[in-house]
Length: 488
Image (cartoon, rainbow, N blue to C red; front, side):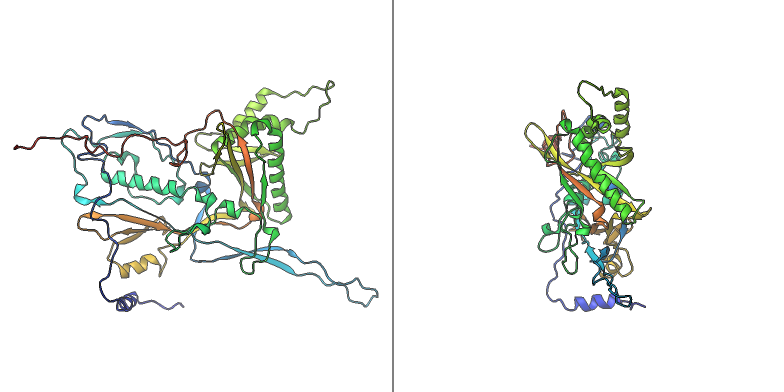
């Protein structure tokens, strides 16, 4: 039985070690936000029509929305991969009583995963400024047409924010603040699913990164304890050589089919069937792939003697296969590629990096993500440090901090802190410690350097993209009413 901790006694012992003035993190005494209502507020313009329309594009985060997440308290878990048995040693017996060769030894490779650390805070709000209106000419009954969230921001990877209702964005200050924090959280951390690398951690540990797919789906695997090379754990990593999809459809079908075939071969030979995968790629890449796939899939291995044989394909069949593979592309459901007669699911993900080349050509990567093996054993998933377990952060906070200063959301995945107010100025901060795990990296693959040329690239939801667009103002300070003083 684990010993019980007397947190009150522990807190007293710790505090007794400190002398002098104790500093605490509090909100600035100067509000940093721009309000939605009241003088200069974003939605305070007299006569602003009730109906608002959303032109905001947020990134669609496909893989984050489908990968499961579970709690874990292990800082450095070790997972094993049995890589094989060494060769038999010894000589064959000469006589009937001689010893035969000795069987080899089993080999194990271990790998581990680290937590990241993500946090964001709200702006500083002046409490008594909340709810202020300019005058009777200002309205709070706005109706927003369009939901920019629309399940785009990665499901459980974004904390559940109280009162997050897009209809409240323009109606009150709390709705606006919560909306802005939700957008920032989902957008800022999105690409780390692919690019995350702990070498980018800050020196003091305030910001940490988990291993993303670009690291997990790789070659050069080593044992986590000894550093011994583990080639049996290596993923398939190949380059398409910068070839254009449009003029190399047959090559694309052959390479993609070969990668998937090798993954299926390995899952079968290692006894991990039935196994399932998802192929992840950007929106534009998938659209261009499905432009050429039907024709190339049906013809890339055909041998036709010139002048003696005609090869005929049904255009209707090609168009049907193209449309079937695209599924409901705008709601991002039902996408797949037909490979060796199997419908392999495709997940469209805006978080995958695209390199823009001359003439608006694009180069990016296609990922083959193993989801489950031996039926329903999940092998790619998120873990997070739970803050609500017995003896954890929340329980300790109930002893060390004033009541209500800390709370958790989403099953303990996110820890929230109400900073001690500076008079009437308040601020909220949240953090989480997630990690991405892939237990069978040898069943994963990346096909890099795929080039495609869409007619025109779609809008991006990332502010650092050349295809991002917004506009307008964050406030209307200086544009509000300016009334004369009652005296000169």
